[in-house]
Image (tube, one colour):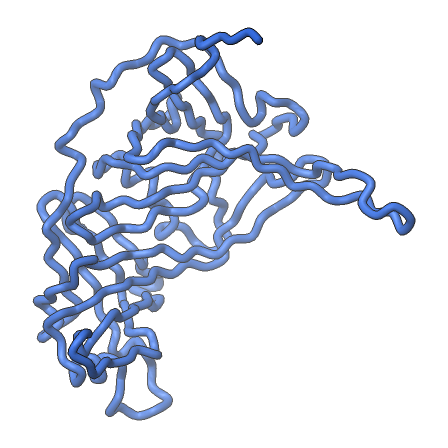
Length: 315
């Protein structure tokens, strides 16, 4: 039995998005993973059962947990809030996703886009950006039967790590507010908070090609918090108890703001989600975890973006 240890590969690397346009370099605290995804349909037989399977669409899925918190990374990772309903998640021209390895390889996905925006993690033990998911689909005028339409690997000198800046890897001590007193000075439990974008999509599939486009059909933002210095009465007031039925939840909605040095997050018009509960026990705090949900709002005839992510407060 022969063996060749040179074929046993371990290849760390980083991602370069949109290399020919406005590039952004992403390093990940977890391995970047590339999944070959294929949609298949069975060929059934009443006599013999499933005879075979037929591929009807292919794509590439790339996942990782970006480390840097920078203006360039933010612009690439959080594009949805500014999009109108029905807008494509893909740009008008294809943007590449390149994985450069320290072994001198460039693995290119020729048409990649953000499919799932990352969670924002408000835990001082963690960096702010959670896992992001990119999709790679057939490029404009591409050939769905060609490997190069989804993935190519070439020998390219490693570009180095000059753009890896440890100052952009932060573990903020957050200041969190949700409207006026007593919510304007929140002490949170050990796990802090989490902000989860919640988009909805529709896929455009072409017969014989597969997914060629993904459009945004709806968008919302959820927030999980565990306040330590809030009373039951304050929670019930924010839930709207004591106000007339038939009103709007938006009347008890406020911007959820989380900020620290070099980072500012806003979930616009966030209201308490129904179904919260209280505990009466020595082992638990009276007020536990709360869930908030953004409510759509408008200004000057335009929808206000439900999520803002930046290195400073908006102008």
